Length: 285
Image (tube, rainbow, N blue to C red):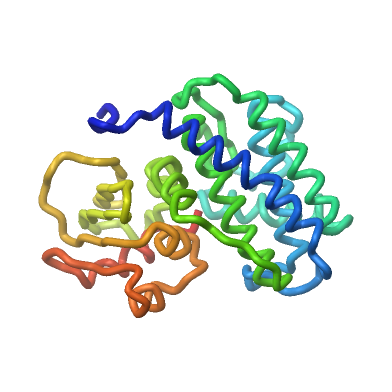
C-alpha cells in the first residue's frame, strides 16, 4: 500500500533527520554531565554507565550498516540465529562488556561522532533505501526511514533513562515522539511480536496518536501487520493516546495504568479492555 494521501514520506523523513540531528548533541552533553556512572538508571538492571555503553553499541551498529566499520556480528549474536528477544538480549549483554569501561564521558564523545557519521553517510538517500539490521533478526532489512526513526527513539528513551538515574533534565517532545511512532513502529512492532503469546489470537487495534500518526495493528495467529492510515475497517479496540505517553508505554518506561489515570491514553470500540493485550503481545523495542 502506498503513502496515505496528504503525507509526504520524504518530508517526514527529513523532519526525522532534523530531530535526530538536534537530539544527538543533546544526548552527548547529557552523557558528559553524568556525575556518577554507577548510579541506577531508568532501566532496572542497568546503571547509568551501562545505558551509555548500550548507546555506543546502538550508534556503532547503525553507522556501521553504511560504513562497514563493524562486521563482527557472528561473535555477538546467539548461535543458530535466535529470536528477536534473544538477539537483542545478546547484543545488550555484549555492549556492556565491550563499552562499559571508560564511563559516560567516553560514551558522549562516541555518540556524537557516530551520530554525525550516520547523518553524513545517509544524507540524500531515499527514505526507502534498504538497510541490513542483523541484530533484529537473520536477514532482516529495514528502510532508512525506519532505521532513522529507531535511532531517534533509542536516543530519546535512553536519554530519559540516563537523566532519571543522574537526576538531570531531559524532555521528549510530542513532535519527536510522533516521528518515532510513525517512522519506526510500523516496521518494529511486527518484529517485536511475541509469537508464542500471539498464537491463536485475532485482534485488530486502531491506534490514533493525537496529532498523528494513525496505526492499524492487526494480530492474527502468531503474526502482526501495522499499516499507517489504513482504509476503514472494523476494529476490536480503538486506542487514543498522547504521543509521548504512547512512546513511553511502548518502551515500558511508563505503566499503562498511570497514563490512563492521567488521561493520556484511553480505549474504546467494541472491546476496549483489549488495549492491555497490545502491550502484552508486543515486546519493548
